Image (cartoon, rainbow, N blue to C red):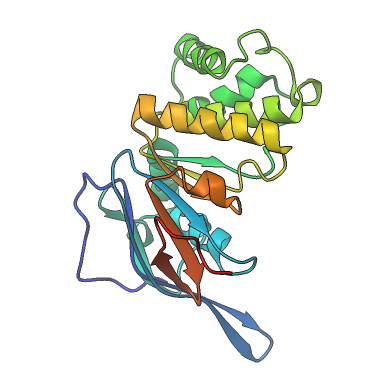
Length: 242
């Protein structure tokens, strides 16, 4: 269970973490992955997180998204400490304020593109006609207006990832957390998907926190943070060391 902290970010801060630590037990050994991470994400801000494989980038994103529980420290979404919320309420906060994009799209294969994008809204039990309009509008925005009835198996890799981006944004979240969102695409397609995310960020004001191994893409963000030795180091404007 995360420890309580003296500092609570205000409700106008979309996402923050304070003194975040994560440890795993491997047999008799305790492996410390995160060693006290502090991060505040401003509204509309674009942050890239880089670092060596196994440095803890994905672990950090899972904690920020409320998908895992820190050993110590706290994660705040709109000023609310996720550790102080019950499971149902934590899920509601994730649905309302956070969007997720992964390296693999994680679309449901038996559903159409429209149904996949609509899923987060259906969880809110919104009227079906409203859900369909919002999902279709976003699919049109990502260039898939003619593919709304296609299932994932009928779409290219880039198209599937664009559906995943649309799904992450359909709830108009405060923050989108993206873990290597272009890592499973060829470079040209990856560039298009990444540029689309930046365009939507500019249009909607949704903050972006993106884990990426691509330093060129990372430098197009507002801040570049390197995960090293369990901590985040601001390397904006410089080439992160290996």
